[in-house]
Length: 262
Length: 353
Ligand SMILES: Nc1ncnc2c1ncn2[C@@H]1O[C@H](COP(=O)(O)OP(=O)(O)OP(=O)(O)O)[C@@H](O)[C@H]1O
Ligand SMILES: [Mg+2]
Image (cartoon, rainbow over all chains, first blue to last red; front, side):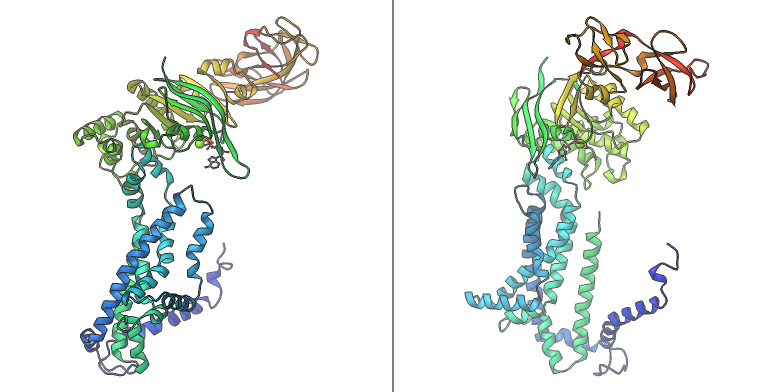
């Protein structure tokens, strides 16, 4: 391809790219910068300080919300990842199952359903069956909608794995379970870790569904932040958000690195 | 001679629309301590047959025995049969040593014994220095030998090899042929070897089964398969062959379409029956003059140790004659030379048309 025909050489293309990057990252950048601001202002810079972080970490409500968020994320990640692994193994390996594509499609369909619809549906369902388990409600709701997120990387890993490896294990005197334990799961682990981290982030981040199904006393971090913002943007909010951002970036990075491991 | 593997009316049909009849009604006996080869073109069902023996597929119908015992429905882990996979399929998360001891450990052999056998296997395939490496740190040929060692370590009664040499380059392939042959002789294990390379099959096998479209066409030792193929498919698939149509005149005489007669072997076919005659190109002689079928050289293929001459016959049709090159390196004939093809009656075979 000559340079002239290459899309990257269209005039102005560089500027458009730059604009998009600014558009994407400038708000985040400002949020992070002003979390270190010495004054209360969210627009005027008046010097570096960690004051807002200290305040945020000392805040009882924030501590409680963080704890709730972590408990929910850990349980729903565990549950969702287990289910997703079993679903991926069945849909990619079990020859007795017919219509695999249909089931696979149905499994990831929730990704396409607007979240507000899922939220309302979950709320209606919970109140219809009279479910009231405190954090348990949120854990169940999160587990369910995290399954497709956990499923995708696991399935991708499994599809890229030579089925003859499992045949070789069977051939070398391992029954189905030993094959799963000694060959399939160890090789699938990067996919599982990657799926679990994705599920963790999604759960930690979730707002709409959580808001709908949360009962009194089950406030999570995103909901607490929202309640703070409604009163007015404080540097404290910036500080918590920055921490949350840091955690997300860290997990996504690890997930990406592990997922791409051979 | 004991039978290691027996097939009796074995069939495999893969479901689908339309279903694929990958193996139709195969009858076959593979003897103990034999280097047995399944030979056939792509898609003829060789892998399917091998997977049935290994237990990765369940037959649609028929019997499959291992030393007389019915194994058709045993899972792979219950069969004392091991496989060398076409793309090796070594466990990437284990070292060479762990790969080789895998089967032994699954058979609950004590650690010390597993180590000792693995060491023997490593020596056998000349990889003693590589035991701590991971498979992706080995060359293709080395991976190949680890796969062999891994499959041989549990001392199976039968070893299955699915085109194990196809991914290697020519030189390596040739040295691995000798190596495999030696391993078979040293271990006394029955080898069932799959290939679509007829030269490989002829060079290595005690016996060969030629397959086509899910059916076994002929079983025999390499010389029988090459010299006395039972049908046109086998004759064409193994080596090169010249065919011509003829009519039997009784006894050993055959009439060619242009009225000439040639002598061949005795046939059971009725007088006047149409038959196909064939001979191997290296068994005819090309002469400047003499008795035989006359024609003109239309093409020359120089092969190094010999040369193929394509001769357009005066009577119509063409034949290929393979001649050893002159000692002094000069050609026997040039394109356009008038020549005579002499065919020794002993070299002519009759196929029922
Ligand atoms: N799992 C399967 N489902 C459906 N059809 C199959 C399956 N495996 C093989 N076949 C079909 O069965 C036939 C025989 O396949 P097989 O793999 O046994 O051939 P092969 O002789 O090993 O060929 P090659 O030399 O290319 O490896 C082919 O037509 C193939 O398409
Ligand atoms: Mg094959």
